[in-house]
Image 1 (tube, one colour):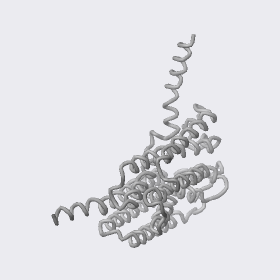
Image 2 (cartoon, rainbow, N blue to C red):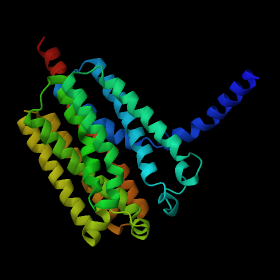
Image 3 (cartoon, helix red, strand yellow):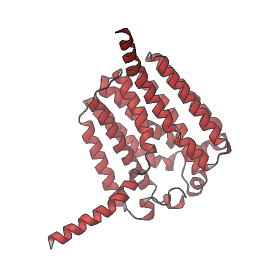
Length: 306
């Protein structure tokens, strides 16, 4: 009798894996990319170019795992609200396809996996990872208490930047905090765009966000956040002695910000969502500019002078 029972359990698990994957948002990689690109940029910058491959692997896997964990705990926190919101009503917890215990066990397993990854890093970075995990866990519940949950999300999503510096240099120089600040401002901006998509539903069910806080000044506040993020990136570039290639990257980012502001002129939900997704290119450009500045340009210079 044991074999049929085992087969039945295996079949049940196989059927549930797609639900767990959906709960972890593996079908929607935008959030992972938004976390990954600036983190990898920080890894490259902290290492001064050509970072050790094991650090690249650990931080890449860490971004995937922690984004998945964040989605699970977010859906757990919103499980009584998501069914009333058009965009989220089909999520597994909202539909009852995954129960609360399963979600918490999955979240715990993901945190354990993240902890295993940071065990390969130095002690300071391990403690930083614990703090980052606490911030990520706190974020979903902030939507009940404050109109500024995007600031907490900004800190959670930017924590990989400071961890990149501690993992590489075992220190947190001023330029690390400037890059962290730029990232927080950028994330508050793009998550406000995201919240503008759900603003009417959030007002009805009682979810708080910067989109609700800003009201009709939302477009102005987004422009201010974009400008201050660029200013922080410029100050970082000056402090870190980044060269002209990185400066060109900042110019491209400025152009992407202008494009996003144009998209949201009518505040239509699909346009706000498109502007939100466009930020994956902002993160990619930041990483690409760091790689070109620190690895490609010096390699070309060495080749030309050899």
